[in-house]
Amino acid sequence: MSGATSPRSCPNVMLFAAGFGTRMKALTQSCPKPMIPVAGRPLIDHTLQLAQAIQPQRIVANLHYLPQVLETHLTPKAVLLSHESPQVLDTGGGLRQALPLLGTDPVFTANTDVIWKGDNPFQVALNAWDPARMDALLVCIPISRCRGRTGSGDFTCDSEGRISRGGDLVYGGVQILKTEGLHRIEEEVFSLNLLWNDIASRDHLFAVEYPGHWCDVGHPEGITIAEDLIANDVV
Image (spheres, rainbow, N blue to C red):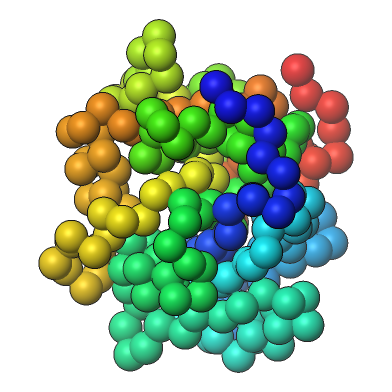
C-alpha cells in the first residue's frame, strides 16, 4: 500500500449535491437536502470541511434541484459548480459532465448526506490508495458501526481488499476513482454502479474499512441520529 499522498498530488473532489432529497419529504420542498441544518451547520458543510482538510486543488459540486441556494452558499467557499440541466444526471452522468472541471486524474467523489465520526475518511482512502492495483477504492463501514441505516450491507471484502456485492460492509459515500471508464458508458443518465460493475469484473474494485462511525442523513429521522452521534462519544 502507498503512504499518504501529499497535498500537491491529492485528487480533486466531486461533491454530489444535485438530488431532489425526496426521502426528506417536506424538509426539501424549499431547501435542497445538502443545506438542511445538522448540528448547527448545513449538511454539505460537514463533508466539505473534511474535503478541504486534505487540500485538493479543486472541489466541484454538481447542482440541479434549487441550485441558486447552493450556488450562493458554495461560491464564496471556492467550490466550482457543475450545473445539470434540464435533467439530473445521477452520480455517473453527473461525474462525467464535471470532468472538464476535475481533470483526467483519479478523483474523490463524496456523498453529502452523511456524517462521519472519527478519522477523516478522505485521508483514510488516501492512505490505502494503490493505483497500480486499484481502479476504485471505496471507504466502507461494517453495518454494526452505521447509524440511520436500514436493511443489509452493500459489499463483502476478501483478504486482499477486493469487494463483491452483498455482505455487511456499507459504502459510506467517499471513494477514489479512476474515471476513464465513464467514457465507455453509452447512457447519459446513469449511476456509478455501472462503472463499479465494470471495474469489479476486472478485479480492480477495492474497499478500505473506516475505523469510526457513520450516519445516513438521507431521511428526517437521520438528522436527530446524526446530531446525537456528533455530540456523544461512541465505541
